[in-house]
Length: 145
Image 1 (cartoon, one colour):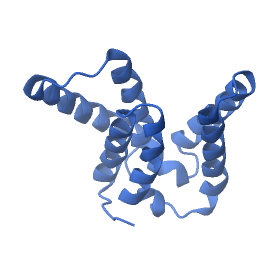
Image 2 (cartoon, rainbow, N blue to C red):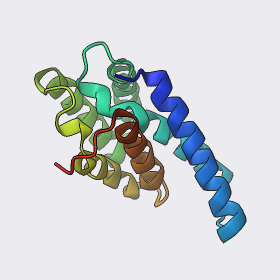
Image 3 (cartoon, one colour):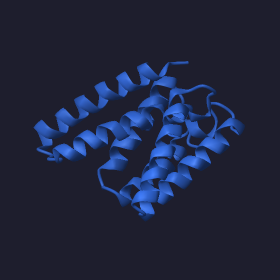
């Protein structure tokens, strides 16, 4: 089992090379803010499949994100923050009951968890899915369901 550092490093290398190719050969332009935020979304998603592992860094990180999103939602009510808080609470409550390398290690889960990011920015699901898929590649898990 690869640690979270391996997953983050693999994603970082992969996305850097891919973005360089897209920039130089296809002249793809993405705003700097989208690149930075998208990169960090991809980092989070590169460790997300391990949410069902006890003591995983992503579980600890999501607990902090849940608390922050709850505070922000109370201060600045917005639908997306409320939905994010509900989704994070669901993951954190359900994770201990789900078998490690089960559903969270599938391509379907990656697509399912990446798609809601379309509500924020059309590029964010791209970064999220690539982060998620890089995790599956490192773990050699390629199941669809």
